[in-house]
Image 1: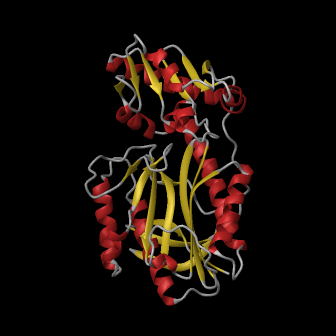
Image 2 (image 1 turned 120 degrees about the vertical axis):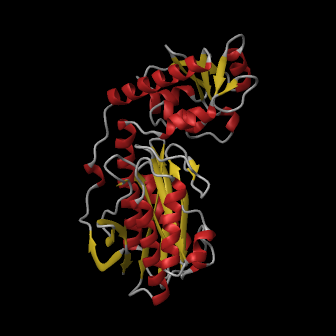
Image 3 (image 1 turned 90 degrees about the vertical axis):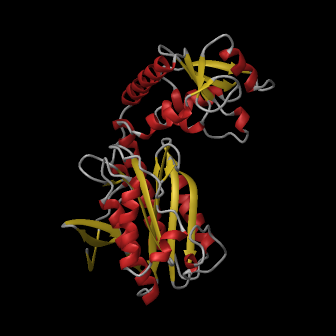
Length: 387
């Protein structure tokens, strides 16, 4: 492996450049998924599926978001058969969800009054029926693990939405990094990033801002009142269209000090190795072992054991955390996040696994890049932005 120290900057692109598919595409996506559910129900010998998980709600409504609920017991649900689909919702929320999320997509409504419980309506739906469920409910047959596997493979519609999310997330993350000022606190930077994301309809799930090499102490940090005067690493996980993505960017006021530069270069080499191995039929255990060897070559072997290296993602922030025991092969059209922490540095992005190789979902928009060659192929990782 060789690392090219020269960096280059990606030309800025407008977040509006990438267009989403139409409502008709979305409805077709929902109907395709209902066909997959019908096949699952037939193989399980069940008449219908009760969907209670918010992640599965998002999946089966083609990235519809069910937000605005403080009480999990009032969260809307779905009921699907081979021929029909229903929204199950309280009367206080059903009109809003249809207007904002699922109007014109073929859903019917089963509604409970707010002063009664959701469980009573769910009980009526499953009574005297052979119903499956995605998370435990009564005596219904649980198909959650099988649904999780179906959900991991992204459709063309979802991939288009994912690319839009990644572009928006990168734009907000990098704009925050380019405009932060010396002396601002980690909390202020987190607030600026949150504003940029929420302004474009993206829900922040996790924000980490570590200044002054504070990440060296905490591999999975949040943000504090610490003023930023030397360097800063910003990591964010966010959700839109029912899909989740995660990325990081690093900033230094002036040239980074030797320790931070060493940490960042090592993190880039390791994350590039993981990306290079992210092909269909790759085994997570073997991918992680390849990264572990780079930890050893960079003299950072102990860092491998201090934090998780990556996870499958999609409709859940973490669909499956990857570890050395994983022998299940990676599949085309799965989404994967690699998040390598070395000392105070982090190199993190989300990728689509494809038959043509890994494709960045959160690719850099206007940021210096480090070019890394692995077995003759070039991979790029976001470098440190010097302010």
